[in-house]
Amino acid sequence: MSKALIKNRAGAYLLLYRGDSHPNFPGHLDIPGGEVEPNESYKEATAREIWEETGVHVQSNSLEELFAKQYKNVKHILFEANIDEIDIPVKLSWEHKNYCWMTREELLNTAIPNNADPYYVDVIDYLGA
Image (cartoon, rainbow, N blue to C red):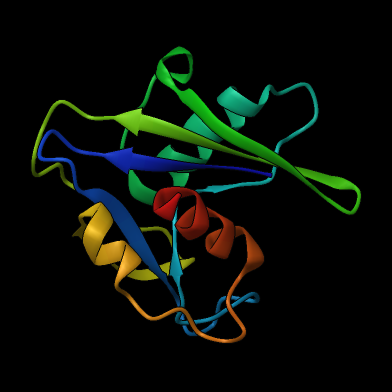
């Protein structure tokens, strides 16, 4: 599993709202990313998932690894993608119903639901460290 914080030139991060029919954590805040396909690197998977979920094109070799954590038998890796624009067009997939841009401070001050995705909680913990 790999995900990425997409940061624009103003320093804000792209956050997605999971759709109400999403099988995991419906309606919750999310960041782009997902499963790694066979014969795919974590960076390649992250770039592909960003494209599929947002329509934003990111070069896989431009992704910077922020952390890796083992969850049972699945490795989770978080990357950062820096976009040299402030307002980029976002085209959401079926998985998400909306998006927003938040600064680090806004993210850290946003309430986290008790039943939040552990990966999302780890991202917030990382940003707060």
